[in-house]
Image (cartoon, rainbow, N blue to C red; front, top):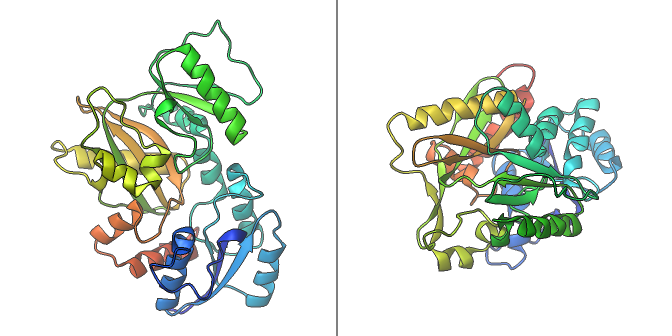
Length: 339
C-alpha cells in the first residue's frame, strides 16, 4: 500500500488536540470522528496534516502549497456556518485539482435538499413520502390542503437537527407552530413529509461507478407505546441514555422478508446513481408492513466515527476500521479514473 500525504480538512473548532489520547477524556465526544479518522490514517502509515476551516479557503490553499497532499480527507459538514454550503469547499478541491474523499459537489447539492431529492426520485418512479416545502419568510397559505400526519424538519440540515417528538404534527395549528420553530431556530426552509409507519432502515453504499451495498442497519423501537410515532429524533440519534430509557437500539436488520434485501440493495444503488453520489453515502428507508419501500433521504458523507452505523456495516462486511478508512482513500484517489 502506497503511503500518502493526507490533508485532513475539518471544521476549525474540531481540530483534534495533540494530547487527546485517552478514550475516557471528556473532550473525546466532541472530537471523536476527527480523532478516529486521524488515528486510522496514522496507523495506515500515511503522513497526516490537519487544517481547520470556517469561512475562508486560504488555509486549504496554503496547506496544499506547503504540504502538497496526495488527497484531502474531507470531514467538513458546512462552510461559513451553513450546511448547505458544504459543496463550495469540494468545488474548490476540484478547481485546485486536489483528490478528495467523499461526495462530489453535484451529489452534495442534490442530496442536501430533501425536496429536490424527492422530486428527482419521484420522476424516476421511486416511492418517497408526499411533502410540502415552507420557505423562510413566507406565510403558510390557509387555502392549502394538507394531508396529516406529517413530520416537520429542516429542508437541508442533517443529523436529525431540529427533529423532536413535536415534529410529528396532526393538524394545521401544530404544523404552523413547528414550521415557525424551524424558521426561527435554524434560519432556513422547512419541509413537512408524510409520516410513513414502518421499519426504519439505514443502508450504506460505497463506490464511484461500481457500487457495494453494506449490511443493512435498523433503528428498533422496542418499548415505545403503541400509537406513538417512531422517529429518529435528535435525542434518539445523540443521547445514549434516552435510547436506553425507551428501549431504542441501532442494530443490524433482522428477519427481512424473502427477497427484500436484494430489492433494497438494487433500490439504493439506483438512488445513489440518480443523485450523482460517489465515495460513500447512506440511504434512509422506511419499510411498511405490506412490503412497500419509501426513500426518506440520502446522505452523502455520513458519519464515519468508529461507532457510527456506516462503520458497523463496514466491519460486518469484513473490514477493520482502518480498512474502511483506507477504502475511502482509495475511492477518492480513483474517482473519475478507475476503481
